[in-house]
Amino acid sequence: MTKLTLGSYPFLLGFEQLERLVERTAKSGNEGYPPFNIEQTSETGYRITLAVAGFRDEDIAITVEDRQLVIRGRQVEDCAERVFLHRGIASRQFQRSFVLADGVEVTGATMENGLLHVDLNRAVPDSVVQTIRISRA
Image (tube, rainbow, N blue to C red; front, side, top):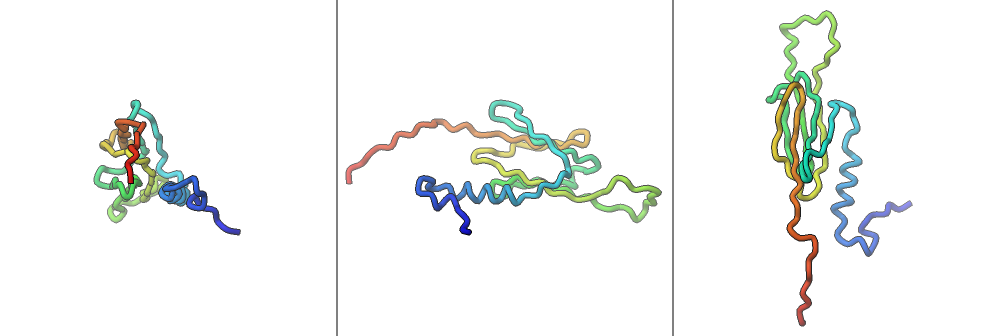
């Protein structure tokens, strides 16, 4: 059976990037750690909040790579001088990825009470309607 792609339909010109976006989104992990919320803060503003209790600012790296917001967390193990009688809180690393639409930019990040807030803003285009002039050959 042949895989149908968006490029195989003649009325979907230029949507190859959308196809790559869908494939990249499908490949992103569906793990549940850390839990997160996505909320709309204004007409063009969004906020992603991750529950990162136990992580410090320097343990977290936030990057944007090819319209993909990547948040990584890595805690340094300091078990050498500590003796645990019970260890129910695991210090583990994580990586969360969010695919950003065209025109969405990361405006900042803050850490507050074990919650990491990443603020996003969507640029509003000046004009939606574009008139094309016909020139003579």
